[in-house]
Length: 152
Image: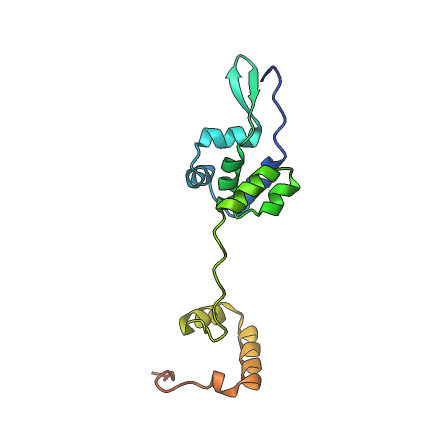
């Protein structure tokens, strides 16, 4: 439908643009991952395309297109429903991969990962973690053979 005034942005526009900014992706990267052009992204966000000579046509993202964008931006079907896009929420549910099964209870993260997390903590927090571990499981904080550090 042609109009001489710009249509209002759709209700989902602030949601998807804020999500893009939150995860720090460029418009180009989101568009590429969602398999749309940057121009189409701009039309979806603005809610219109310019026809020239001051005329505009409303643009509404197809449910499948909006679902692909939502998938890239880690949006949920419930978020799409809250902005009135039930159709896109259903489409997102259809394309969302099944959640990865949880690791078995016996899973232990690699020691390097634990060390990296600990190293990123302030010293007093590291000491508190070690104190709690030693209270609950003294063997957990004892160095194993071959892993002791030596000065020099």
